[in-house]
Length: 88
Image 1: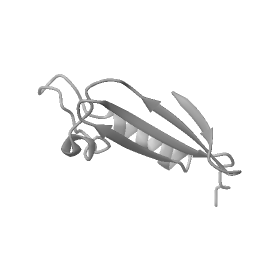
Image 2: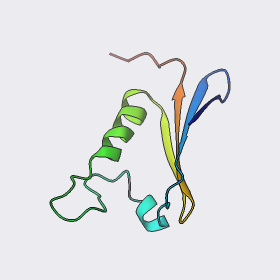
Image 3: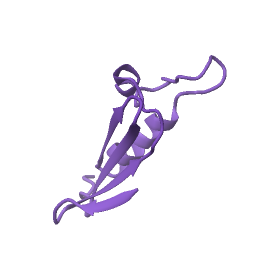
């Protein structure tokens, strides 16, 4: 895990594992509601959807996933240092 200041307005958090990575097909669906690689009845497929909602919708940020099958997966979370004012 590492952090980085992208510019004066944004920071990034990089989280990388040393696991087996994902196929492009799986990686392209991980933020979809109810998508899971677990057997039926063993998972709801909501974890990454909730992460996406919190980062993107609540904090006006960005999340991306870079995965290389057989090597690793890295998630990059980008968050603005200042939140936009809510318009009422």
